[in-house]
Length: 168
Image 1 (cartoon, rainbow, N blue to C red):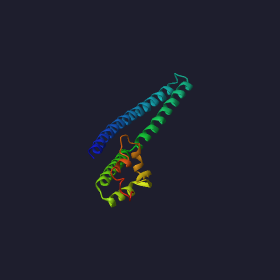
Image 2: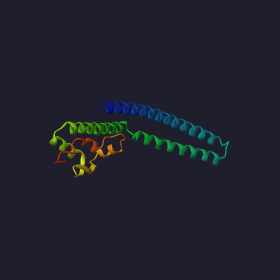
Image 3: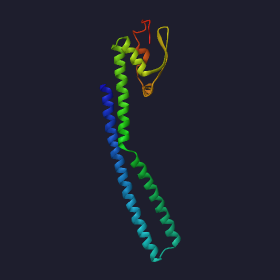
Image 4: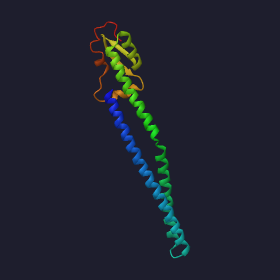
């Protein structure tokens, strides 16, 4: 559990840095929007003087308008990436890993009834052949754990258990 807590804390710090980075990007994009608005006003002033061809000014105004629209779209996308969603996902992931750790501990230390409950909680379609687990499928959200390197699989969890004729 200390490892899960350490990973959780590291991810929280990373999320905070990412949030700060996003805030800086948003701030820079908002400054660029202000600059574009000023450029558009200056171009309109130049247009009124009649010193430059109308087509040249129109082309530049279109380019500034397109950049403004692109920046507004990017700002909207960034503002929709809520830090609360990231935090909620992080908390759910932490819970899955802690639950799995506690389930393994309960399995190793528990009696047959406790072990049976752990397996029911984590597994779907488990089959036993020759007093060993032949196949299993993890329930959601525990399927994510299959992708984790250096994990203990259920055969290791059952070490010392195979001599029991009831087998789960």
